[in-house]
Image 1 (cartoon, rainbow, N blue to C red):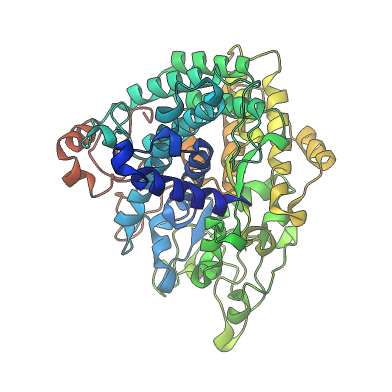
Image 2: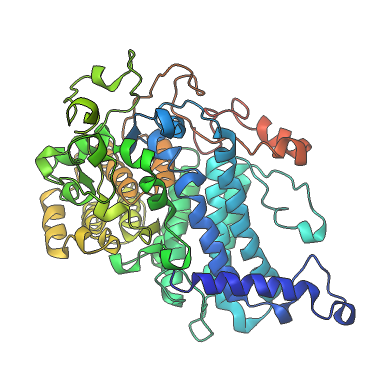
Length: 538
């Protein structure tokens, strides 16, 4: 992300000059950017930037899916009451605003991709940036549809053609279109042509890596359909495997914050906010899961805050990451002194500090300061570990995804999951030797399909959660059912005591696009509600 400021700034300048320079002479439509004044590469980085902002920080996932998937827990009282959205399904003052941000940023990212496709789709020399833009568009649109359900796709992103009230396509049709668009783009990448120059992934425009990323995305789309259309899921999973998915940890897709230039990691920015830094913890479910198998990630990702209220709120003071001391916070408790006060939770360990410096939550594990509070930390999009775990499931189901066994794919995925923390810095490194040894010692249970699916998808949940891709952890839980999560039933919750299955459409949709919004809502089993199930979530 080193040159992001330059990319975004130049992109803005290009948009301005494209709408104003020599307007009378060239008769430029002020709603469009002429190809002569347009550098496609900058819009690709803009799309990546909007996408990563959509899946991180206060734009949704850390305030919703991090707790819905029970990766994080929070006492969510006082200044940090907005975390009640995720931990207790209780609305805060800005819940509706937060709920609509994924829609806004997802479409902003896809809009930039569409400009690339529109302006350069017929230019053979630009085939690689057009193909990359199509992959990014699919990534953005999958994010949106998996959050909300039916969405505009076939008529979306056409405001310049005066399509301002696009129809809501059924989610099944959206998925079919995404498969077709992605398949077409991946077949057109051409290593002999110019590569995209403004790539925020660590790929630096490498065409081979973009193809692998695209096929791993295809695999992820395919596996999303295992509950609703197993034949389509198998078809596209097999095509993705044949095309070639991510092949090593070095091919993971992530975007680093660039704090020195004003583009910080939104997850880190959220966690370092004083009230968040104090009250957000790893969940009991996650810590228990990791500690039960002596997972070496525990001391890498977790620490007990220094004793006392003042020290535990000070981000300059690191905690104790000793494996044996780590303890996750149970979801659904608070600091309000009533029946749900954390001091009344089963197994409550007590607090730390004394007198006015006492904190009731001082012995629960928080995200380790040295790893997660760096404002230039990596923000993960899709990893080799995820791809291998999905291939492990596909193989376990008996699909033709190559000769590698499900057990080997699982081993690859588990080892990669440990190694994928490396971009967080030296304190996060688990060596390949240690990661492989751990994966060898913890093989896949192949005694039955259900045993394999449970093990694979629990690991997928933990891996995506630790990398703070909370939306992906939640989506995969919805479609796989693993891990088994118990909903939090807290007074005043907005989801009838159930774990939310979707976010509400933006409040503006009911007024800006009312007829199509109503059709989209009618296709949800339960209407525009937190617990309504979308098409693939049966």
